[in-house]
Image 1 (cartoon, rainbow, N blue to C red):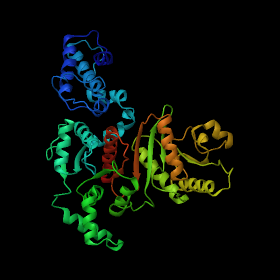
Image 2: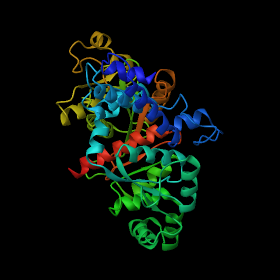
Image 3: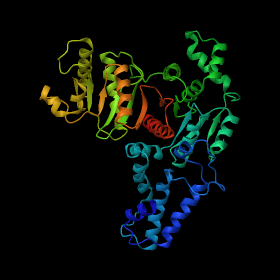
Image 4: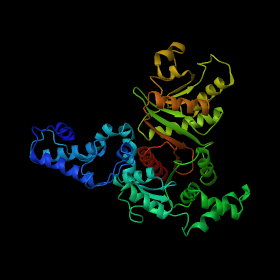
Length: 435
């Protein structure tokens, strides 16, 4: 099908032999390439390496359209049959991403920043196959300079088993917890940071030995990496504890927080705080909204903030409603140029007619795209319900807010594509921090 995609997009007047050959060559190259994670998942348990039983790519390979259509369009131009020749083939490939990944267009501004200034990203779960597959994509797309934390032999075996083109030392730096010569420097730094928290030298040694997240955090603090990803294994709070101890908060941040993005059929929504603050106060809620709004701008999206509650514009005198109202007032004082309002119901946040029915002179126009929820239960439950019922699992995040260095804590359900997306976001965060 993708020969026709390329032909249609460049306005080819006919299909030439050169266009057919371009298509065939891309198919042949993909047959010899490592298997995409979507294909590996669809054909779990099968040996999918180039050979007698695997001579052409599987139809589910998302790279087919990204490789064949541009090659066909280029061949059409060179054959003189393209009525609308495509000049910028890289931009065309980026446009084709919308057919492959539903987050493709949403992430484009972030990917553009990352490609312009690739940074060193350390992956705490360097032995995880999702990370290894993501690193292959990151290298192919020139998004970052990867650093993996993991045991050398385990990483080598898993790279080989997955059929990836990765080589330790050539493609990525490896920090092996069992043999890295910096071990003493790491545990001494950790001991110095935590000496008044009951951490003795022996405790520090043991902690650094058994926690790849702790090692990654120490690397980030020491300037050996520019950004960090963790969280694919284990509980979010356990990872956050290591980040809090070693990385800490930005000077102007009151608290850590998280925001998740959901791509829904009618809306793109950001929800906060989905993972960190159990019952944030008004000051914290205003801070969370401010940090989330700043992160949204990294995606090229102007934030429109709603402080969501069970009450709407004074209808409830309960403490939680008053807290959301106070948070809105504090946010307006600090960011008067950003549209916002609250406290309000969820439907009023998304529907201007509903909102105007309660308050005709609301300071928010149209639909809100950043929903600040009163507590972690409300935010996390809403996120997971929307993700499954209408979001088809198309999400970005969790994005960690407030950390002194670029770090994000993923979840065990993260896919390879989410790791790639969050790598690009971490690099964009690093670029912003360096600016």
